[in-house]
Image 1 (cartoon, rainbow, N blue to C red):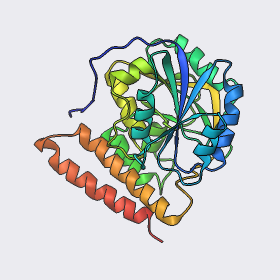
Image 2 (tube, rainbow, N blue to C red; image 1 turned 90 degrees about the vertical axis):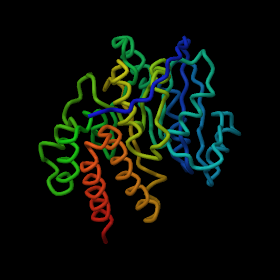
Image 3 (cartoon, helix red, strand yellow; image 1 turned 90 degrees about the horizontal axis):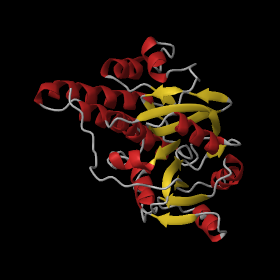
Length: 294
């Protein structure tokens, strides 16, 4: 098995400033709720940047006009990772910590400070993730990397046998202690900018989904840790932009399976693994069609 990590040899020394990059795509009222929650999430000054992927609802522009955030327009929908990359690249050297987040997150009191405190306990932490609640339940946001066996077992059985051993192992459900993980949910993650630079941020080939799995894997290969810090808590209020209508939901489902294939294919390269890649593509395509059936 061969990996395809992207890395940079350049090293920059950053200050300890904090920035928040919110990737937006017609976020509606969720953006205002996110910005409201920032004031109680940290006592530190925060620079807030909206990486906007072509919103048409006016919410990012309204937030910028009210002085609540800076607006960096992408001009089109570049996808989550590429938009975050561009916004982070525009930050100056005083910023050493960046929270990348969806707008449909509500930060709990002290959440950002708790993540930064965890970073002091884990000096090799490249990424730190909070405990995420959705619909009142703890979401398994700190998971193992999807190895081939674990990934296939989860993909094949999760819909029909939710308690299967592959899914339980992969999702690490029930484990809410501070610990390392294979990857952390990109919906809300604090990143050490030095670590971010060392792997060149998100891989922009992932339009949506698996960009966080890939980032966690590459951080680990570069010697950094992905740390789950459940003392920091947030609420994910829902996928506002991806569940509005059936065509959008269908597209997102296709993107999920396309990204899953890309992640595994990147790690099983060469002629030796060609039959495996063909089988993976066929299986994921079939699973996507089954999931979209009426």
